[in-house]
Length: 250
Image (cartoon, rainbow, N blue to C red; front, side, top):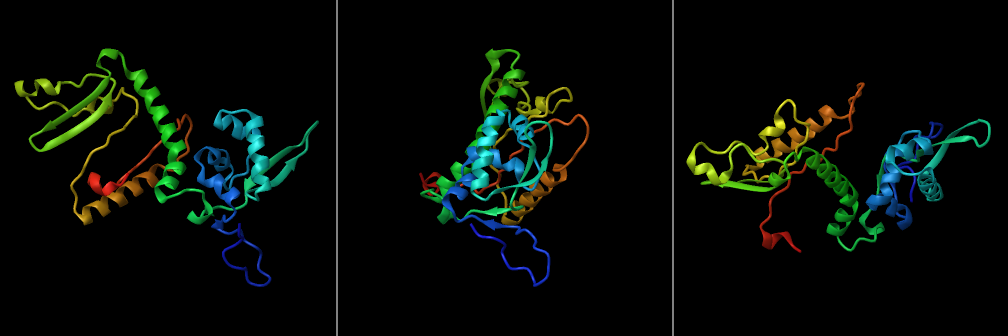
């Protein structure tokens, strides 16, 4: 584990490095492993107490304290201040850097794909659990809860897991107008704010780059908002070239 990226000028106050490099495999594992990282992320550049983080994560104080002691030993966490009180004093902790860089060589991953899988596994599982709960709450009639696949003369249009029957079933499309968009009912005012859809777009390089930047701007637009009565939402945006099966690898 290394310190600042470059030394400070003589006499200048020491500033924490923006990117702390983690070459120690044990320290690198904290950031590379999705499960362990969830205990560390609440402390990144924020002063936190063990009890507050335990409530945020929905785990016991003992579980968080175990991880805090581990992060202290690895030099990833520091005590910022101690608040005296009757009995045991309350300690506040904060990560030792605003940002961390884990080189691939410091991880135990056998490939880039394996590192990507391990790093995102916990986030993906959280999204899946949240979606499953939300979908289950919306399924008023379980008989219509299932997979709906629809296409037209141009090819596949949508394949989605839905908790309701679309307004017009694809099997009946030849009897009248084209079926309504599968996810339209979710956009109704009384429906909860849920969106989960995967589709293939045919774009030029310029159009794909524009969409990439729009997605980034959209996420930034809603990030960091603070207002009474807010509910936490998980947002995952993905855009990638859709490789043919023979090029995608195992």
